[in-house]
Length: 189
Image (cartoon, rainbow, N blue to C red; front, side, top):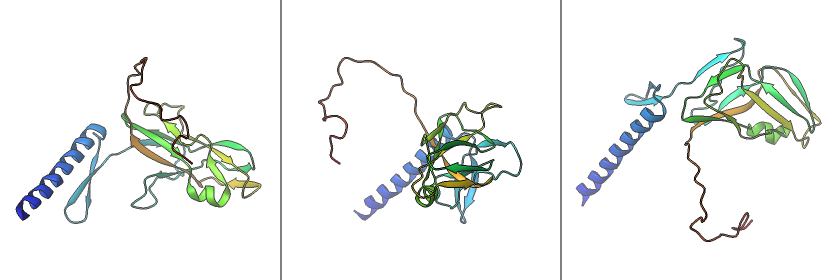
């Protein structure tokens, strides 16, 4: 029994590594090798970007476990309570085909200052990369904490999460092949 259990664990581990390589070759063909520890090699996809001005911070992950890269404001603006404003980041980002960039709020800005991304999450398509396609963040001041909030140039205002996505063909049908669950909110509070 012991050898069978070991064999199953080993086979599962090999299958996971193979599935990871297949995922990378399909969704991240431009991945580069990164050495972690003494022997583990992880392929990391790269993202091309261009800055309008060189002193704007490059989007980075705040910690090794962060899912989102911080986006910063390329301008200064006093955002009054109840007001929204599009802050330009000064960045053009070439999201790879098969992926989508999600511009999400930063929890610290929401909790401490009542600021959120108005169209959250904002969508950054893979073909949004032309000369006029600078990434913008629509911030909204809920007014729940302060009357106004001064955004300084270089402040972290949102985070960019890049995830794979699928495309589907829409097929119109007469019957959905299932019973109704009761509509919106049917599973409780």
